[in-house]
Length: 506
Image (cartoon, rainbow, N blue to C red; front, side, top):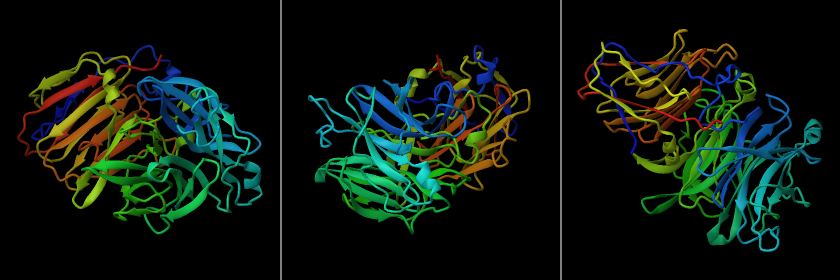
């Protein structure tokens, strides 16, 4: 059961919670290294790719450039986990070749060996990915991206490229990439959801090698501030019925600037996707959750991870010797809000294994400061928040240098917010230091939030995951104090709890 931190809405003065001493044992050069999110040991990372669960292991592949901290010729990096919490970086899975760089894609478990790539009874893991050919791109042929296969017969440890690549040539579309493939059981076929510039195109195949175009979706629907990327299509159950969710990342054009991921809920019949509503909805209103997709082969659970950065500034953030991390794994579901079905997401339950000893403080007053036990060396923690009515409140994480990360709820706007305008290092990109907002969708008089803070990132899950915000930030030193301010008019006595989170970094 999640702990909760109850805010006293009658407080008119700020109070603070001291988080103890600065974390120890972390190299100065890695001051912003996340402690319970995956980040590569060194060099550049962006989109998560090929996420799949097989024989007790979660595989996360990712866009990776092993020779620098900015984007370069793309490889598939590889990391694995048995619990979605502790990740072990593996050797690079796929390298660029004569057909091009290795762009985003997916991995499936070909249980029935429809591809014929399995041998001696071994089940093949098959990667479907985009080859990006820089020579053809320079020649402006509009055919420089096409889809290819690789396969593994040793449970994902090593990979062999298919000799017949590419399996889906480019028909002449500049942006023709990011295949997300799943098995469509009722018609015994594979369905590929592909980003095709300003829309999604669906293809089908009996064997992963031969593909037939089925339909298109999205040219006149949704947000179109930038090119469409990294789509995903999957079913979710709601009240005994199946609805299909289509994720589409867009860059730029997000609700708070730069990169973001929109979604649609509707029906899919193996050929055509029909949305229930054309209203634009967002997976995450923060600026740092992009290109997220779901794991394959996870049974009744639908698990999602995104890239915790934004193309607006990803190449200049002040980290070294690595750049970027993933979001925490999240479990997805559906919730009815008015006449709309909305996506909800919450941190996976496995993360509870990191919980340290919870500190609960009852009936705090505005004039009383509270000293918490010395914060764990990770500088990472969880706050759970609930109020019995929805008045304004704000919470400020601060340090001695005057850095402040502010988050909370604005009743007048009926919106949650994260403000990183004074959060520390912000001058590396002119649009970084801003206040981001997320409209509240829930009409409940009870407001709940789960906040995960990991050294240099904040993930806010409001109203049981109906509204989500993810932002990164770069304080000049640890944020060791928490100030809580709220408006008059509340009636519930506050209960404050704080849970330090253990590190997964060796």
